[in-house]
Image (cartoon, rainbow, N blue to C red):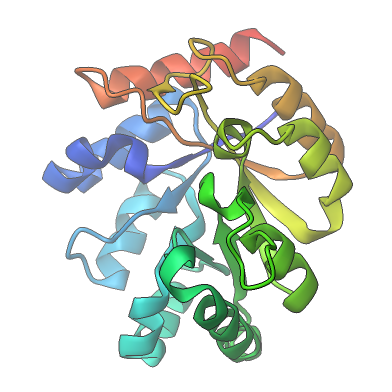
Length: 239
């Protein structure tokens, strides 16, 4: 059976209030792993106990470059403790710091590799725009000037005008994870199946390519856990 994880930002309102109950609910829905978006002030030992208690695994952590700059050793120790092998940069300001971001990737990738941790980058739509010093996009620069692996947010690729199925197929050797997300072409997030993105075509391609699939929902409904359930049920009912 195909397994899915969820980016905990999808339920940040619930998780901030009660991380234990929220992660337990995530497990009961059917998700098999979680991708972090912060740690709710919990120690690594306490966070791991919650995830383990729910029978889940931590597939990756969304952690910015600023946190590595501030306390690299502390972040590494936290990731080791929660048994997370993937440090995923969730966002960077490419308009202001294009060259610096490439430098940071090339600085931290070998340092993390020595610690048994993979450095990855998660895109939004800006990474597909030609905003580099020579008119290149951030995606192009990362593929050419670094060895970083990508977590492709297939919805934001779609919003940027790229074909997400073609992109993940053409660049399969540089991709470890994908985000399954839905919404309108104009950038308005929706639960899976309610938007315009080719979610099922992306999912089917990701299965063939062996990518880890992480649901991220930004539907903005009144109950984020209900929408997380809707997303899982959409995938499960469209095998």
